Image 1: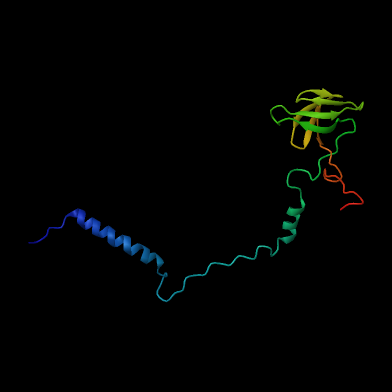
Image 2: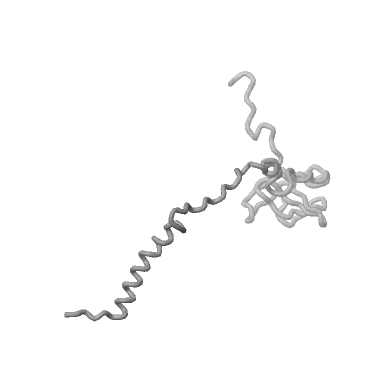
Length: 150
């Protein structure tokens, strides 16, 4: 019995031959005996750019290196109490020496408390905006060791 070839069978056989032959043809070098061209080797990373790269590490990560000093008449931040963005208040020392609690939006000595961060308060007066950090204790908040004991 002779088998009659269908067009679908011929197309399937051609697709199989093509699927096997294409990857092999792509992997073979362009011509017989020719070596593939080598890709150009880039220059080492620090060859001529080290001084510029060093300057990147010297500049501050976010904005200025040190925040601008607050004006002398700005309130001094003594502490922050509560949960930020919920019910936090700032403990500030006014110019007359009294300590007050301020919620966001309240004012003292002409300065309005704009917002609170974990370590600072932001006050505004007109178009002026200042960051008043929490004071840092000299010993990092730890008690100093006694002279007699270790």
